Image 1 (cartoon, rainbow, N blue to C red):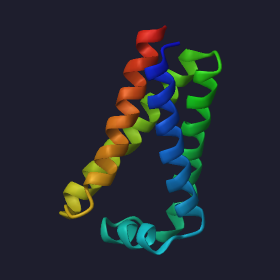
Image 2 (spheres, rainbow, N blue to C red):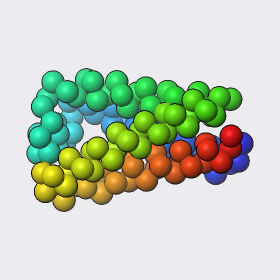
Image 3 (cartoon, rainbow, N blue to C red):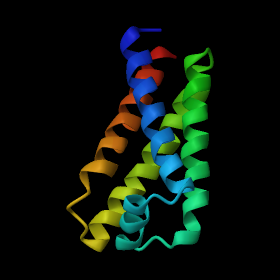
Image 4 (cartoon, helix red, strand yellow):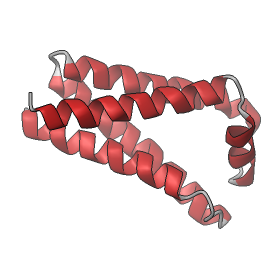
Length: 117
């Protein structure tokens, strides 16, 4: 596996673990952003589980099952596309760079895994 794949996917994993921890501990910026785009507080644990599943799938992909990694990256790409749409619908543009960055890393991870299979 190429070093660039390992680096990009590892960064994607770390980003998702950090934000899922923010969801779990209900960090003020995470809760404020969720509320601003219309996501109810009770959804944060579910969203954290989805991010964690995606991160775990990326790790599995790195350790030898690239198809699982590709599927995880695809799921995270859809997840963050949904986040971007939520930001656009709510007209919350001041923090849209965050879901955009997560989307780009998930999509890049997907492309790298697909290229590796």
